[in-house]
Image (cartoon, rainbow, N blue to C red):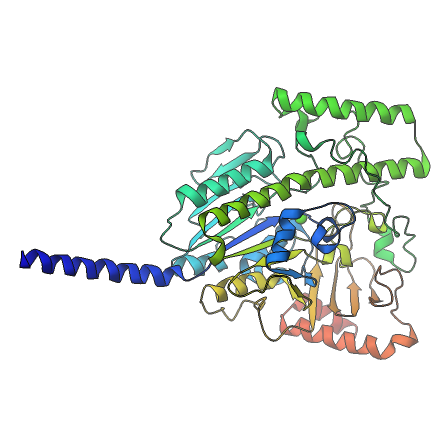
Length: 504
Ligand code: CA
């Protein structure tokens, strides 16, 4: 009896010791990143969108913080993800464009988290043309992925097609991993990577009619003439000329591959809707600005249509966290790989260091540390994700990571940018630059060398290039000096060489 009592006490101590360490581990927060693709700030109601209501994403702003000055360091899909993973600028992680394979074996936040006992996971859009590493679980769509019945590359190496709408299916997979498959004794760090709302904007069948009776207001700069802005003039990303009637705007697109992969019910709903769109379009026989504006309305209807499912699915994840009691100790981040043009300057797509694509949406809920309703106006960028994750997990931030925590007490004064993918689709010239809270200086190179300077307070739409204007002489000089400083701090030798040639 006595013996078994001692054994019992010993066992209880062992268990409680185990539980204690389990408990102390448990104090480390879970981290959940909802990362969409090409989601413009202008299409989130918490940012004051005139176009759409996104009540579930808005919850994060109400219950946490909205970031007004979060920027991308290279506004394009795969490089943005590479920066998220590594905490480094493109020139340091080696992933400058969408056209190459990412070196997925380099140091990155999931590696450090895994070593420290976190469960790491990435589900959905990945887009890095390399097998994910340092993840306990991953399931990613190949390349851009499909909106309907998407394929997933599984850890086994097999590609498996999943019936359903991509945003739903990706969320289903994430909820399954959270509820059934992960090791619940460890904290987790999960990225739910959405395809939505990437081109060519296919809404779920139930959302096709949602914006039928909405007339979207044309942005003031829709008919921009690009005066004084050579790269803006040269681009190939306008709603009026670049956007394709068939593949993008779905006129007579019934025989396209994206329709063919739908199941019969999806196809029926889809064709019922777009056959009518096509017929109405043909009947109207539009030309000139009437045609331009028809395209704009159709673009906006489809883009916004995809977001309805995205917002619902963000809601599903938040509801799951609430229901399971995980919400209290989970940092939830909503962001997108970059911003996007919704007709501003006449454009869709991204790439430029101008405001709409330079900005990233970001909302963070973290009940333990963020006061509900916080509005953060400090300058942040996407090199800050990885340091934030590591710091909140209680780990040291490696010296070669170039960002700093979103919660840092010493906010940065400016942010650096460098875009590389040229010549390529959309013809956006190579450029680098600096943005402060009021000014932006951009240096274009590699096909004509020139500068642009904007006073965002007086000219928020960036229509008047002030470079060389005597009234901005002192500011221009200061910005060039600050830019040079950032280039040296971040060791961007390519940009340093360009300045050196100019005697800077
Ligand atoms: Ca993107």
